[in-house]
Length: 107
Image (cartoon, rainbow, N blue to C red; front, top):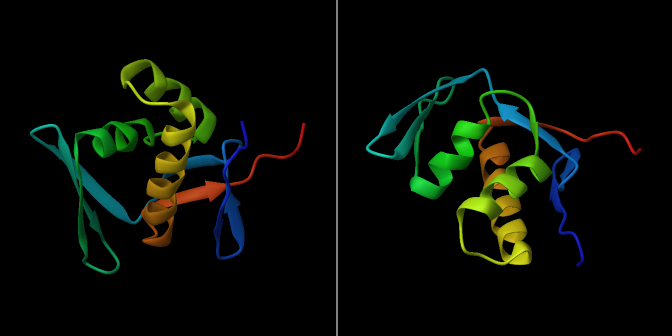
């Protein structure tokens, strides 16, 4: 399996990255989906139930790998497809400044 990497300005996002919800947002559950307000821009975002599950895991720092492993146990999806979709979602959340991304040091 080839690991995917998403390039963001000044950082990369991969399975070893550590992610957490950013401080400039508030969010709530809306019937299993998530509504997120970016406090600085005033922009609202919404996530479907799968995205809301990912969002719930971002309340404390967590590796993308841990999120990936959690989702693999819940959804009937290939590991490669899940990795691509997860990195895409996290990349969009980071691009909107809704999450913070840190690269883990090499072991």
